[in-house]
Image: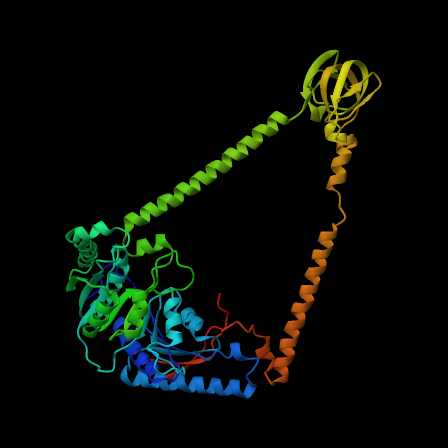
Length: 516
């Protein structure tokens, strides 16, 4: 069967290995999954040597590198022996396992991990690396469990909570399609989950059940429409423990697909209670589909076009309102600037004319009346009960009386009376212009600025000193200078091996650019 147009792209498969038996089983399971998807398999070993460079000797680092490359070669050979037509690449990462796997998976890859690693707590049901990979993933993650018996049931199980799990159901349908298996959608609801909030809901159990069934059937109808050749079974069960029902149902499934993270609003990388329980106790591999991400892109990808349109309209509306408000503010400022642009009445050719203050020149005769702004420095020729407000220059709020022969400064305001004055200075030559020139000049830094600059220099010297100390300590421990020149947080990939369809081995160079 071929996937329908628009069905989710499953992407490449990335598996992490650490030498443990669960990791080896995960690698073989990942190889089978990559074969079904007709995609390459990438085997990653993360040694975390960059994080331990200060307390590991150069010899220890080289031993770790050698052991890691040997493990990659053995794992790739074991995969090539069973899946000779599969393209396999191996990657040795000097970074920590969790970020290395996420970075290798990129935007569309699927990360596969075993349910246990080489940690010291043998009774744990899930290793810390697998738990962190699942909690912090932005792409699908599969935790391989329950593959010891080697039997297949021909069923892919999808946990459906409501319509928001349609994306998980679509991934599950795609997995069932490539396996030529059937799909079972399972919805588990707890009748007592709302009793603490609304007790009267218990009086209408049938209505509650009908609402839950409606959510499930909405998802099932969408899957049947998109995958018409797929056998889809939808079941709704009532229980006090959703995790318990899903764990029991996983006994009869080849793969369980469910939402991998909590809904937005929870701080940090988290897993829901049911998801956490399934990762520890499921009887089959568990595939987690992250629920977080860009909501417009997510709704388009899952085919929920109405939601995508609504979200897009909200974004366009908010942007339009913001731009409109910004334009109105600009127009208001421009209008105020036009209103505040000073003008002056002057005598030219024996006629009183109102001109812009910018064209007033020394020698012009200025006519002043109540409320006029003095356009330039001038000397009064005539004055009649003239009072001017010089607060913008002197800070004095009391109007100043002016007589003939008094000087007027540009920017002052005639509060009362009338006057005739001869312009003596304009622009930068006026008193107001000289003040503006002083403000535009270079000012002496304040004491606070001096102290901040001194603190910045001290921090820069301390930082450089620490970097130099780390570099010298690394050289003293026998590390190569080239290795010490690398950023300790940069987990670049060393050269790995590539295994082609015929099982032969070639050398493959990996990009050594740092991760973004």
